[in-house]
Image 1 (cartoon, one colour):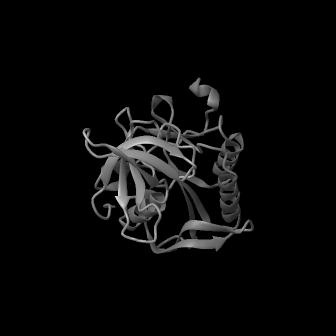
Image 2 (cartoon, rainbow, N blue to C red; image 1 turned 120 degrees about the vertical axis):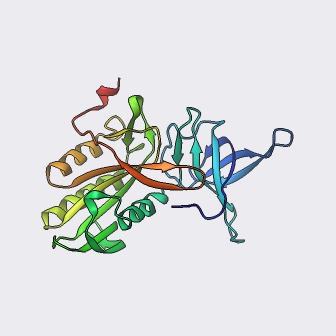
Length: 248
């Protein structure tokens, strides 16, 4: 997926109030600060260090109070991360359509944001009309940017009641005879494998393992990121037989 228009860059000063970030732009002789929109509700641990290079897009919508949107980050360690969590669904959709997700090939119909479940959820992606499998496939997408030691990516980066609900809904879909997939869209180039963040949200980790045991498929694919394009290119292992103590 190519970015619309050329992204501009600056240096992160601080991220605050969840949806705002101050960055420094301009040359070294005449720098100045601007405030941009941060489309990420998570803790962004490791992705909000002052001095990191920020890449942002600019909207031509005159009604926007903050016309610039934070899209990417180059970490101080040299990795790239996608900050805009709204990109994850688009990346997975694009990869499915282009047959880059081996486990999700063969479907002729794709729908988005379909209402489902007893807890009144919306599924991110719904695949149907498979050439050999009569089951519909419910796909919940999660963006992973939390990097721990040893190239481990972890989810979630904050306690997520919403994420817990989605796992319960996916288990119910399997029980009803459908396919259900929890898809980790790994949007950090430093990550090589994915684990549940039990030390942050132990209930999510418990539910994720239960979901796997009950037939929910757990997939992870890693994005290739630059300031012109981002796309999912590589499957990664998901490690469920672990705990927070493995990292200390």
